[in-house]
Amino acid sequence: MAFNRPDQFKKLDAPFDLCIIGGGASGAGVALDAALRGYRVLLIEKGDFASQTSSKSTKLVHGGVRYLEQAVKKLDWQQFKMVYKALHERKVLLQNAPFLAHPLALLTPCYSWFDRIYYRIGMWMYDRIAGHTNLEPSRGLSQSQMRQVCPNLSLHHVRGGVMYTDGQLDDARYALAILQSAEAAGACILNYAELNSFVHSPKSLKIKEVCWTDLLSGQTFQIPVKSVVNATGPFTDHVRALANPKLKPRMKVSRGAHIVLSADFWPGETALLIPKTDDGRVIFVIPWREYVLVGTTDEPDKLVESPEILSDEIDYLLDYFNRYSTKKAFRNDVSATFVGQRPLLQAALDSAMSTDTKSLVRDHEVEVDGRSKLVSIMGGKWTTYRVMAADTLDELEREVLNRAPTPCRTQDHTLMGGEENEKSRFMSEAKSLPADIQAHLWSTYGSRAFALLALDLTRLHEALPYVAGELAYLKTHEMATCWDDVLMRRWGISLRNTRLAGEIRANKKEAFAS
Image (cartoon, rainbow, N blue to C red; front, side, top):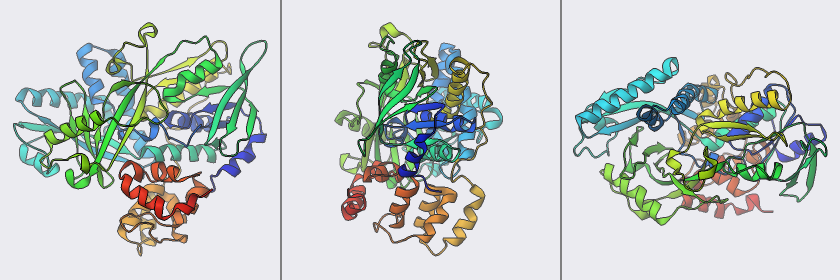
């Protein structure tokens, strides 16, 4: 089944019930939910799909241990509800695309008997809140058991540890799988389509048309729509202002910086949760596709298109990694860096410039502008993308379409490529391929990987599992238009090793020549 821009443009001549602005996790979720509810859906994304926050996360599917701690300490019911929703969505996210998401064990070291009891009770609560959706029960570990699961963990002054299970996902490809599934359900999905303006009804001032430009051809479009959802994450206020200049800003961004090291710095499959830093943050050390990811920071930031890591942030993350690892890392060991800007919902409008981002609401809110009827989904996190979408559609149906909400059908909807029962057959048919290429094809494309077996399986780089036939496939079936689409998001190698990504680009630069 093709998924390319020419085919999508052919769908533009039909009327649309809904236009979604933004092709990250929340926009993708809304597109799939709406398409399954029977609506004619158009989604436009200014850049590539998941090219901003949604591809630059810490790659975790989690309820939020830190948020649970805050909920208990501050008796904060909102934080507790957020943890509850995320924990119950965690298993859904893993089940609907098992080739892109899997359970991940995390270890928290304890340096006193009090810490050991404190974190053990906290993880017990985490398990209880998850209930029947819990992935694995948490458990206490001795020093020797900690050494087995985390061979490079420094055990100096350690009194034991607590291990629990959350999940890990390939965020950019997960967003793509949601969008592919939405398209298969009838949605029109376009990347590199930039919103220009809205046309309002002269009488009611409700949005009746969406004006946008195809950035690759320069062609402009003015599309009639019955409703509009703003799912642009950190850029939400910009779209709100286009719809109604009188709306006050609601968003603030926090920068999450990450560094990447080779896997030999942190062997094994168990991640580390550093629960307490000198400045009150939480840092993770996470095994990630032959590498180890260290992050993240949580500082107020100015909204920009492509945030870059700061020198101080690299030093900060290296410092904490080296405090806990027996194998020390230095700047020249960092194979890649990336920064994501998180959309945080600012509850106190009059203090938007002074509030510490660590204290802002991580949960989501659906806003319907009474004048333009623009529906904005604000805040939230990757793990709850599906609930965010359902809440958005429910509110849109009630407040804009004036009808009772249609049942959401996404909870048990297997995403494109997610037929896990096909894995053994694929491995059998691909048995002549090197093991790393087999693993790459399945973990990238899932049950759609069979189509790759008929293409050119020559390696593009001797140290990497990517094959020549993938490039044509990515153009035709995944709407890749340039090397950044491929290296940053379809494969993600640029986020793990910038040197190797550069070598592929240099050796095959003609693949995306204009």
